[in-house]
Image (tube, rainbow, N blue to C red; front, side, top):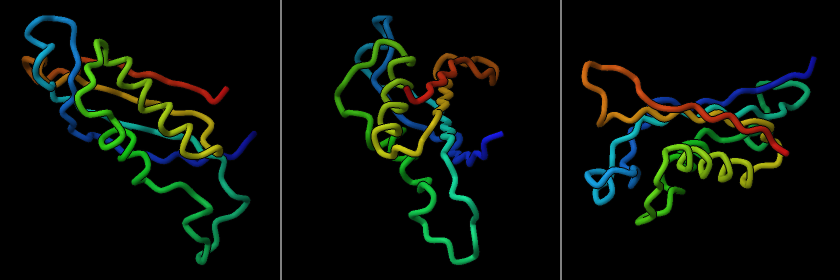
Length: 123
């Protein structure tokens, strides 16, 4: 078996231009985004192991918030997830797999979680 480190950032609420219906195409929609990145870990994490031996959670948060291009309309939330995955892969060669879960908050009527999960592996 191969060792694995999973970094996780869950339940970020982000306003994103997304949707295909006329009522969705001119205003940002609230999305709840969660990201998990599988990273090849170092052999051993000692008490004095530097941050450079891992990946910063802030990188995952940035990929799901600040790295989304302002003013760009994503027709599908799948495209939002794809952009987040690619941003994370480009930022660190140690990332093996990225999982992005997106819940469309505006269409929930009774607290349901309606959305998608995209999983991409480094190629």
